[in-house]
Amino acid sequence: MAESGTNGINGTNGHATPSPAAAAYPATDSPIGNIASLHNKVALITGGSSGLGRAIAQAYAAAGAYIVSADLQEQPPRAPVVEAALNSDVKSGASVPATDLDFSTPTVELVNRRWPARAEDASANASGGVKGEREKRAVFVKADVTNEDSVENMVKTAVETYGRLDIMVNCAGISAESQHRSSTGSLARIHETPVSILDASLAVNVRGVWLGTKHAVRQFLAQDPSPTSTSRGWIINLASILASTGLTGASSYCASKGAVLNLTRATALEYAADKIHINAIQPGFTDTHFLETLYATAPGGREGAGKHLNVLHPWGRTGRAEDIARVAVFLAGEGVSWVTGSSIVVDGGYLAQ
Ligand SMILES: NC(=O)c1ccc[n+]([C@@H]2O[C@H](COP(=O)([O-])OP(=O)(O)OC[C@H]3O[C@@H](n4cnc5c(N)ncnc54)[C@H](O)[C@@H]3O)[C@@H](O)[C@H]2O)c1
Image 1 (cartoon, helix red, strand yellow):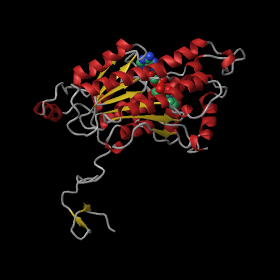
Image 2 (tube, rainbow, N blue to C red):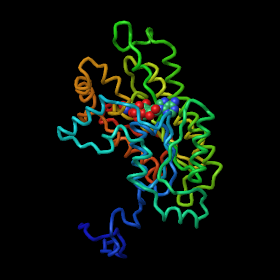
Image 3 (cartoon, protein in one colour):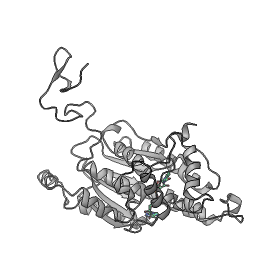
Image 4 (cartoon, rainbow, N blue to C red):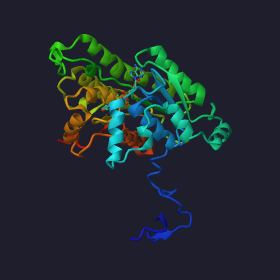
């Protein structure tokens, strides 16, 4: 059936009929709504200064959301090896978004420059009785996700700035093992790993997600439900492929990400009746600051490590932050109307093997 000029099945005989209003897809009467729109939602993203959190902030802003970026520091952490590698990928013809090549502009500045707030959002909110200003698309709040007062404060900042909270992305995470080596210089197995590595991994990767979930849910339950959705809130936790499979030299990281996945399931059950979606993403190895130490210390440098990692991912390459951000948009939108306690693996096929 020809598609051109149609706006869905709207004739009485079931045939598609042309509609002059069909300016863009999805059609306004689409049964799937607009699953890429986060218009006017308020999102709090931990780890927003770098990597996946930074890409998610940009993707959410492009989808119409207002952003609170929470991190230990506003400046993106330096990642010269990853930065050089991405630039060299571009020279050899790879497609990398320009914003992913910028490792120095703070996320909030980047977002506000590219996706400024819209005056009509502010006036629509004012007439709908929604509190909070929409003067800036994004704001930064300094936060340490391991500290409960700090987590409470970042939620408070979202509410004071934008009047409510709709989406919580628990993205801040660390790879504590990458900072430690065995006596022979290789990745350390558990018998050569100090317990401080475990404590650090659990503090950020598990306690941080637990606290983020706790305080986001408190806010979801305290505020009026969104006027435009039957769902009451969306939480997205960054787990990893290493929640479902092991990796030598990463015992505490694997343990922490396994915990994130089951924390996602347990909390999803607790709040399903409240219509709060709690889901996870399991990225494969993705080129961000997170891989800086791995690349910088690998025997063959990024090139050697990159070749090794490319083979491990059947798609033939490591991930781009944007690959993960796209799925994070889906998990915060109308497409997940009946999805909770689940995880989406975004790994170029790594776990399918
Ligand atoms: N990049 C990957 O290969 C990969 C793969 C699977 C999962 N992940 C997960 O994705 C998440 C994001 O990783 P990324 O690649 O963006 O890493 P990244 O290092 O680029 O960014 C992490 C950010 O978290 C922040 N952070 C660390 N500790 C914090 C704390 N206590 N409080 C607040 N912020 C803190 C850092 O300052 C940094 O800005 C992590 O949870 C990570 O485990 C990453």
